[in-house]
Image 1 (cartoon, rainbow, N blue to C red):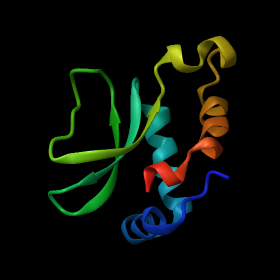
Image 2: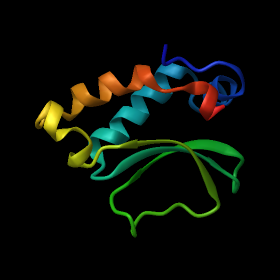
Image 3: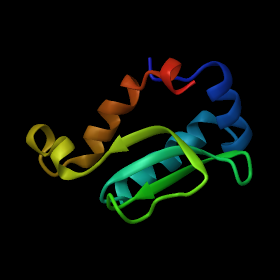
Length: 102
């Protein structure tokens, strides 16, 4: 159903205030990025963060473990959605398997 449970939800609520606040920020990263939106656990501060990564070789976040990555390169959605990235993101978010993220 695209809604986290367990530890993932507890950490999202701790670090973003609510699931809705996290989701809004994650979608904003996905809309702004050329490559990926990434939810990662950063060992530097023991918190979750959303990152946008523009290219394969630029924007890496060191000392962080990616938990969820959303591909927003045009090859991920253009055939089905044309330039409508937002609808692609809105359709993918409910399909996240939070058991895997957890």
